[in-house]
Length: 328
Image (cartoon, rainbow, N blue to C red; front, side, top):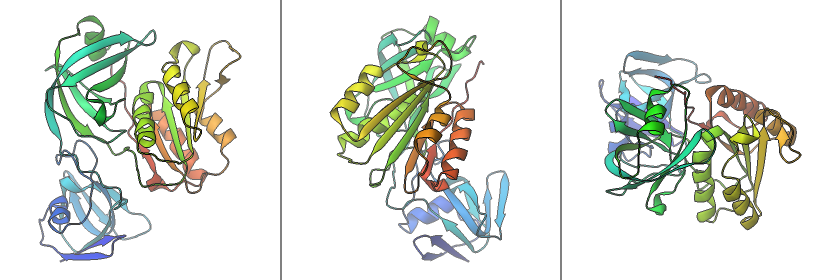
């Protein structure tokens, strides 16, 4: 059996039953990975031809123009096939870890968003834009994106309090400074691509601003000169936060342009009104050569993804980890 890896043009011999991620790693083929257990999504790759069995389902592709995405860590090779690995020059390999962290700051940044800062007992390696699973108690576990950088020496998260939410209710009513939290990660594929030199677009909805802040800070700290446009969409003026930080970054870096879009509420004469996707459509008629990072509610992410593809961004250059709010 033969495995062909595109766009590298590599060919390796494989045996039926081999795990795809193990084959790639053993043959020094660059592939991003983290948890190796199917949770983080980092090792996603595309099946172009042949058959790959992903845990619980089979992917058989005969048309290379269609393809199907699988997680390499959860995939078994059953016959000769062709796969495509994403961006071999932008690989991140942060082995997933579980570390204890101590809550050092809890503060309100809006009427329903809390900023939580934690100090880890051991370093946690991650790329800007990734997220972690936070276990406050065995019954209170949720994924949240880091708003911080690995070099900060602490982890920052932004949590929107969901009405009647079990986990966010615990955060609101019981979590206190000094508490211990179990942090598992990193996870996610919407991390900063530092070798990209073209324009960047970040679209954030609500607390989706957290990973976008991490991405922006990471890009600027690494001296990236890309033109960067940030569109931050909120429901009402009361939901706007971190404006001081965004303004300071925009003033310090002329290549950064910040746009705040308010969907509802009275006009304040300062912020644009409407949907964040409409603002992007109005401002940016062509996005050929751009890269985009999206984070927010799944309907916003889906609408933005569709718009960006219509405007010329290649599907593989739209990076998104959509989060579903839970009231359980």
